[in-house]
Structure formats: C-alpha cells, structure tokens
Amino acid sequence: MLKQTYDLVMSSDRNPLATLPKKTRFQLMSVLAYMWTAVFVVWTGQIVLFGPSVVGHTILLVGVFFTADIFRLARRRVAAVRLPTP
Image (cartoon, rainbow, N blue to C red; front, side, top):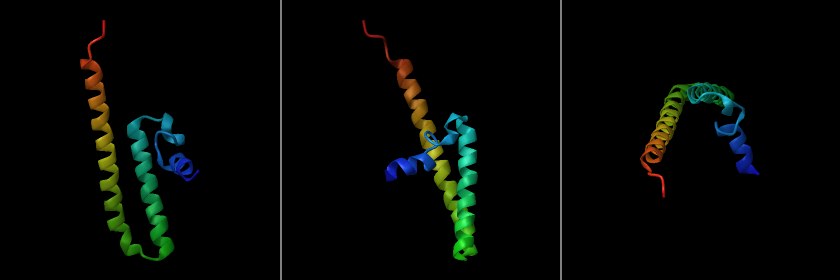
C-alpha cells in the first residue's frame, strides 16, 4: 500500500504527469521538488536550508534523468542490433 501511494505521487511514469513528454515531466517534477522544499523549510523555520536543498534536489533530479536517458538509449541500440531469429 505504501509503495503504491509513493509511486502515485513520485513516479513520473505512474503519476498524472505520465502522459506528458519526458522533458516536460522532468521540468514539472523539478518545480514540484523545489516547491515542497520551500514548504518544508518554511514550515520548520529553517530558511537557511533552502539553498543547499535546492542544489541537492537539482543534482539528484539531473542524475536520475541522465541515468534513465542512458538506459533508454542503450535499450534502443540493443534492440537495433538484434538480428531476427530464423
């Protein structure tokens, strides 16, 4: 149950943004990450943590997006190289 709820919000392949192009999903997920970071730091009263948290979220999101793109490209190349079986 917890995994399904997490995926519903955090997985860009399963949340309501899934039908958008990948670049648009990445941009919107980044905006949401920054917004929730701001909400959290304001809520806890630790506004000095906003800058480092934004940097951390940016590094994480770019890393995930880059890795997913590399995997996608590799999958395409492997599919293109496979020869049909007789």
